Length: 287
Image (cartoon, rainbow, N blue to C red):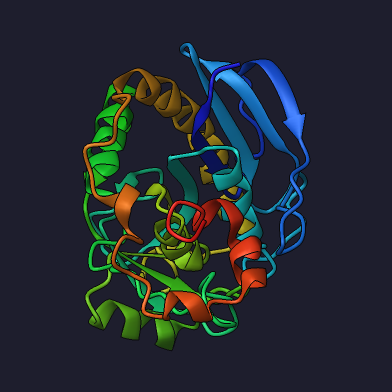
């Protein structure tokens, strides 16, 4: 069976990928507990692709409860090198309308309760996230979404809030004053964990609402969010089908060497238990 180098993490409203064939389900056990759900692996355009519903099938996990470290560790253990995140987002600017797609290039972290790193407990690593989304994968994702017929915006800053509640009007107006473009609840710590695992990561953010700042639009609610997400579900899946043939076998970016100069702990002081815990993430550097 060929390697699984591409994974799709489905957000709200995207819990499966019907286009996959030759499907198998894998339960992966990680040092951080089980992933959000069984990982579905199937064939698409001649390549093996892994699919993981971020919130679990049936949407059982809040954004804070998502086991981000388990999810990324599990995908890394399968050999995944690229992750496409499909996420819902609110628009903080007039020009990003509901049912548009944004491929963000920047993040602002406004979360409070999450485990942000694989490192600690005897191994200190500092990764660079000046550009938190893989520039090459972003470009390919943009082209695939355009090919699939979406109205797509390239670039923008995504602010991640804790959730599960939506913003107050005061918060929404303050976020707008900061210059962010879209708002969501799951890109952090998913993006930086992917970078620590040396996995390319890009987000296809589907605009579902104008948060609560827009005086002429209804305030965001679950009914609105789901209706707009379901309208774009076909676009999400068609985009992935368009994307797979566009991906080169070799990655032309630097994501695959993100840890090359990240470790600062003296090697002989790194606990063996920590090396074993991180397994597929650090094996090439700390055998």
